[in-house]
Image (cartoon, rainbow, N blue to C red):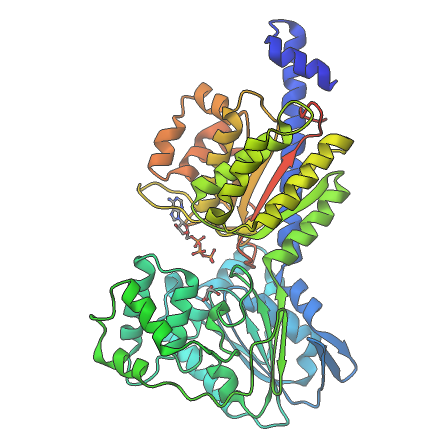
Length: 532
Ligand SMILES: Nc1ncnc2c1ncn2[C@@H]1O[C@H](COP(=O)(O)OP(=O)(O)OP(=O)(O)O)[C@@H](O)[C@H]1O
Ligand SMILES: O=C(O)[C@H](O)CO
């Protein structure tokens, strides 16, 4: 069948058979499309707030096992949390250890309870008799008065604990904005101005959170310090590449060891040092003494005296589960890397090259392709080792004729906004990869999906999109000019108009966030044509 399809496509048959083959072809494409979507869903499912909390908290009678440590529960449990996924995490934690819970406070995004209710996610809401107080704030992901109040309540709760108590801290992405505690004499407005200017100047999340830690009473280990001498167990859902404990939500339970010079270097880099308000300079001039007894330990668990930090959900975990789903669907999985970053143009080029590498005719892929792939590595945050390992799998696959391959990766590429359109980095990446796959002389039949695990790509209702080598023809036949949409960063409008939006990925709000997931399905060699 594959040979017949190859023949029909190369000869451009003007025959009824061609019509039949064309519909067969589009059915097989949609089969890969469906599988790519199923693999993405499995990735998201693996990091649902309730699932990650169940994975992290093991209960045996009055013993609680977490991060390799055992705690005895004697009605001595308190809970705090901050982040976009924390409400669902708190609901599950209360189901597991609610009988020993005295009190809790969570700081969650403005409007989240209504949004979850409207999306049929009641499981992520707390019961009416819950001991946990839900405080909403940080409209538009910016720290505000409401978030300040929530942070104050969390600080008060932590500060009143004794050595008999256990404080469970739930942390997820968005936690920095939801736990603002400006170090005096700085005001919230002054602190917010600094972080807003840094973000607008293009500072990375690592740079941003290094500065945030230095300006806060609770970040950079401040919360764990307040809770001393109670035992602190932090369950962390990571939204930062590499899962750095001290940077996720600015590490409120991880002692910050960044030096003041490091903070000044960042402010200098973005030309902000001279315009800082005197209150901010005053805070930065005082090195915050740290009485914390925690130190950096290798991931994923950090255990030192009274503080234990455990990563319970991450992009890596999502990719591993996606990979298991791929096997179930008859695909051979290979995980490229969980930390893809850099400009979407370079990332799209990489996927285009990998597809050509896997599908080029002949016994071996041309060595120039491998060289170009390796050259791109540093631009997209992928180690040569991971690229070589992935290419080896693709070569083996060609030689041994395994089934379709499912290439998986994750991370957070960036888009340089030049236009005023509606879109997101996932839709823009999918669009650019679609162009790459449409451009080659030999169409690989590959299908590419890029999606944000939170279900929302930029300020749009879609999480991402699914594309393939037919994209260009499809757009042209519908009078859509891809270049125009790209120049205006208008990927959402493009995909909404194309074929009635069938290529959009619309899972709705997922209630979790471990950055983005990329899935590229490569049909089996030697022909690399669509499979049925
Ligand atoms: N029109 C657009 N086209 C492409 N990308 C866009 C567009 N508008 C915004 N973006 C990108 O969307 C991102 C912001 O959206 P989003 O809130 O999904 O990401 P985020 O800041 O990483 O938040 P989260 O961690 O919750 O996913 C930025 O990277 C921004 O460059
Ligand atoms: O809250 C934050 O700081 C970001 O989401 C990174 O964790």
